[in-house]
Amino acid sequence: MGLPRLSLQGITKRYPSVVANDAVHLRVEPGQIHAVLGENGAGKSTLMKIIYGAVQPDAGTVEFNGREVRIRNPQEARAMGIAMVFQHFSLFDTLTVAENVWLGMDRGTSLEQVTSQISETAAVYGLELDPQRPVHTLSVGEMQRVEIIRALLTRPQLLILDEPTSVLTPQAVDKLFVVLRQLASEGCSILYISHKLHEIRSLCDACTVMRGGRVTGQCDPRKETIGTLSHLMIGSEPPQVHVGAREPGDTMLEVKHLSLVREDQFGVDLHDVSLAVRAGEVLGIAGVSGNGQGELLRVLSGEDVRASAGCVQLEGVDVSAAGPAARRTRGLHFVPEERLGRGAVPALSLALNLLLTRSESVSRGFLKPAALAQQAAGIIQKFGVKAGGPQALAQSLSGGNLQKFIVGREIDAQPRVLIVSQPTWGVDVGAAAQIRGAIMALRDAGCAVLVVSEELDELMELSDRIVVMAKGRISPSMARAQADASKIGLWMSGLWEDSHVEA
Image (cartoon, rainbow, N blue to C red; front, side, top):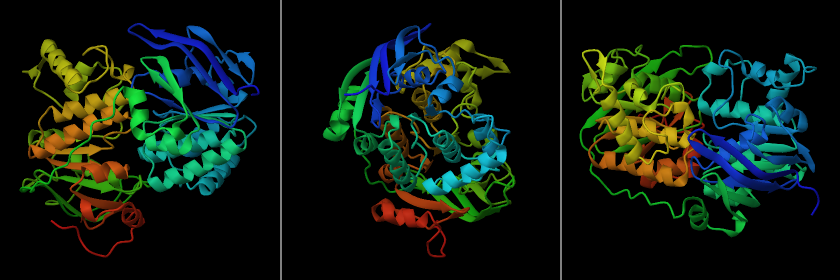
């Protein structure tokens, strides 16, 4: 064997409450697609940030192309030929897509050249994107495309991908895999972090497993099963979510002929959207990110109250003009797709983050710190959140653990209607099964659940009925038994009969 592209020896990183990486060794060959597998909080993202220069190790050495290097910042990493796509995006909201990409490019490249390169790369790789759009108008899936294209434009020798397909459609994932295999054939090494075990088996030719900050095993994922990979990662196979037949009850949430002009020039107009969710059922909304899901969810959550009277009803009561607090009072709770900044305030503790949607621990305008801490501790325990206790800052949690806390916070409120967007984005298989199980338990208890997800497998597992959203319109609904990936994929292009969703 020749010189490895990357060699890590004894990498250690300590934080006040945890050892994120403990004497980690890792070797990646040229042209290799190498998976790093582990449950949430195993230390994978910290290790990738060390390779990219965003975090400095306390001990250990990094060798790149056979030479020991000290990567002091991401700019030095990019100059060496290392690019990274983060799970949590590093984009400036007020700048355009092109301006964000331009910031990381060589000073000799003009903004016009970058704009042209983005359009060309997006077309080649099937990652539709408008370079002139401000980032704050993009959905999470579209932001993911910006990060991927930005990394591809640098033509890296080592490409680090942290949950790159978490909000991509199956069709986009297939196209991305073609791109990654092509890059690998040209000698580019790829470090691939994903909790989607079927992707790792399909794409990767080597796998390093981490648990508790340590490397606990290595394997060829092509020779493993989903079950054995899961066992390597979490010590057991993930529990199966059992979906029993249930007769739905009364309509809890109904949208009637909702048409709404977008609030900004890059948004999506909603056209005659109608849907209904009944007690004791899960309605799934499929679709490519950026087709009106964000606009619809803002209307349903009460963040956008421009809907005409009668368009949004909770248990037959018109709430079109009611804000989020009034809807929560009526039993509607909401989990947004953006964890940090919308689902949680990064710099506040988990206990204080309860105040975003829960008010039980407030009396006559005064907080009850002990009650808040007790409530947060209960959610942490019940949903298996790995955190340093109720006072841990939201930003200190891994993405998957923060997701478990946010979902747990809303489920713990015992809602009558629950709206969840991307419930298991970036969550490991064990935690994903736990979240899905909690959603199904809520449904079996009579809650009406609306799930928006770009994970077709997830929708097929959870939903009693599925609709598709495309270009601001909603398809007719279909029972889970009638749905299949090819039909849903066709409907994602807006190709369905001109009929309305069943009430």
